[in-house]
Image 1: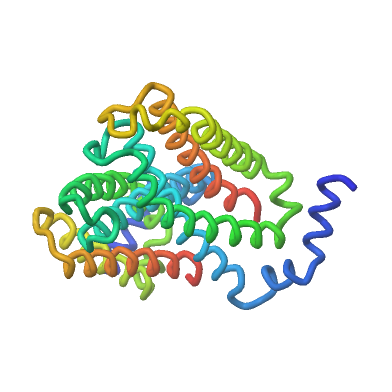
Image 2: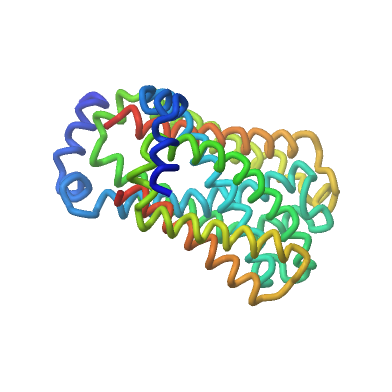
Length: 145
Length: 164
């Protein structure tokens, strides 16, 4: 694991990002946009499952578009996140908040997309808790690193 | 008193000292700002998509607004109060930052767009409330809103890399 992180940090791509504040800030700005998509999708889909937002509508009317917005956010954030991670891989890779962020990301995505067609309040509550937990871990990683 | 002098005065206040000097004051404010961003813009986009006829097309526009408004408003209150408080701590640097100016101008555009929608297009809402695809004016308002908030988010993050 340590050697993989060291290799990633030593790549030309990581060096390019590290040397360019313009590139880093642009990647970070896109990452913030992806974060907004994920949060918007997660709130819409899971508050829909909980029957809070539009109780008279079938939950899938909210879960399906909400999950699509989450997918768009992930499509933005996975490459931008990797590029932002690469220049500081050896340090960030051992950060507790980063590890928690990755664990919550995998779990939240598995619950959201693996159980896309299932509607239950418990699933909505779990999804909401996982995505909000992910946002908290991401915030703590950025702010307290 | 010039705008820059007002910014310098803001930075000399006790509130600015709390933002910049306390151990976790800045971090907590940024966390609240991000939470507000996710809640406000994350929910506004669904109303905009309804105006564009892309989601919840079987639900009247007025009901979509009524259901989403409490979430959007809570998010905007969190985002604007935390943003204003952060601004007090770094007012001079923000004043001269081009991304801050882009962000403020685009927030103003989003506000103007919402006002035009409210006072013009929405007045005739009863005629198209249940339409799957709302009229062109409403669709334009939805598209302008989404584009505006994308610019606000991008400029907001660019700011933090060019200010400190």
